[in-house]
Image 1 (spheres, one colour):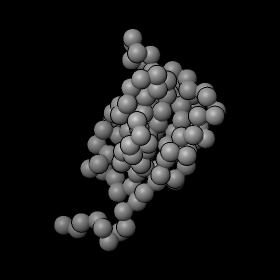
Image 2 (spheres, rainbow, N blue to C red):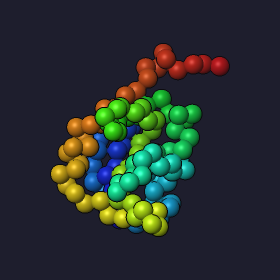
Image 3 (tube, rainbow, N blue to C red):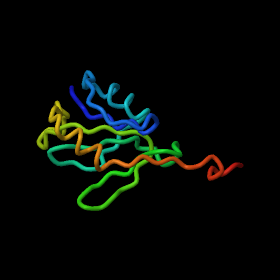
Length: 113
C-alpha cells in the first residue's frame, strides 16, 4: 500500500510503500494508530503521541493548523469499509510538504522529575 509518511524525527515527507497490515501502519507511528481526519484521505498518528514525544509536526487542516506529536502517515480510506488503500498522487506529496511544519521542544523545555 502506498502512503505518504510524515517523518517528524527526520523532518521529511515522502511517499513510501508498506504491506498494508496493521503492524506496518503501527510501525510508521511507533505505536497504536489514531485517525485525525477521515474523508477520501486519512491522516494517522500515534494515539499516545502527546505523552511520548517532544517533537512533531503542524498540519493545515480545513484552513487551521493542528499540532500533532510524533510522526504520521496519510493514505486513501474506503469510507464504507474503513480500510486503507494506495495514495499515489505525486503532486499531493509536494502540497503536503507545503502545509507541514516540523517542530521540536528545546531540551530545557522538558520537565524533569
